Image (cartoon, rainbow, N blue to C red):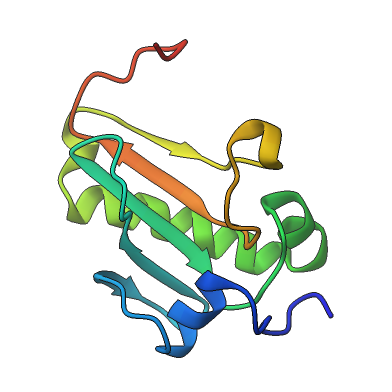
Length: 119
C-alpha cells in the first residue's frame, strides 16, 4: 500500500534504521543522507519517511510531504554551502530516467559546475 513501508525497499530500511547511512538531516517527515555513489562534491539524497514510488505519486497523494522534501533539499544545500555557488535538485522517475530505488527521492547536487545539458 502506498505510503506504508515496503519490506524490500532500501530507502524504507534507511528510514527505519535497519540499513546504515551517513545522515545529514532528519525531520518528522524526511531523512537526508550522503549518496553512496556521489556525482558531485555535494550529493545528498532527501527522502520522505513515507513510501511512494516516485515524486509524482508522492505529490499527488501527500503534497505537504512533497513540499517538505523540497524545503529540506534547500536546507541541505545551505548546510553544505552549495547554495553559495548554485545547486541542482533532481527527481529521477522511472528506470529509463535513471531511477534505481523506487522510493521518491531528491538528489541535491552542488560543489562543481552543473551546466545544462549534462555531459
